[in-house]
Image (cartoon, rainbow, N blue to C red; front, side, top):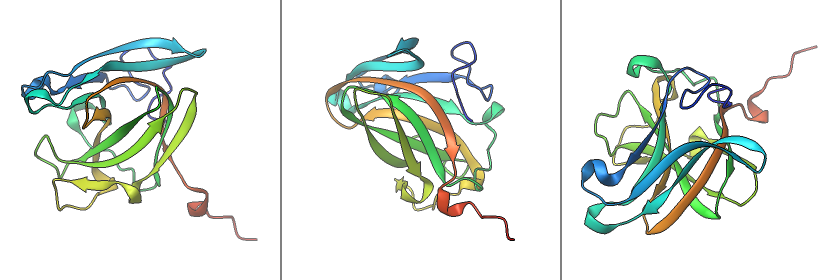
Length: 177
């Protein structure tokens, strides 16, 4: 479990803090807000805002360091990330960062649609695509996960009700008889 929203906001289950970032850190004009809320009867972290491509911008993000003090987490025993999401029918992304990435724009990315009902989205590690890096994803050294509204002008409204590592059914070994 990475975050089941059982701790006081913005603290995740793992003890690190959720943070909001927008493209304003690099001169963009997107606006965003992060708040704890109850969506359709379920506690959630809600990211809302307006993504704008003006001024070379284009993102609103909530992010979580996976280990205190910018350390790393070995997630190699897991097959991916699982999120419980509720949204406005828009496409969002999950961006992973590892200790090998040094530039702020580098990440490993995978998209999903957040429908207007609670759904669990499964994102296998082997489907994350490197962005602005030639370094393969090393799940032994994960550092941060971000949930992102990015790349086009739109209003974002996404609720995150849980976040965890997942193991695919194929990777679970049955005990031998």
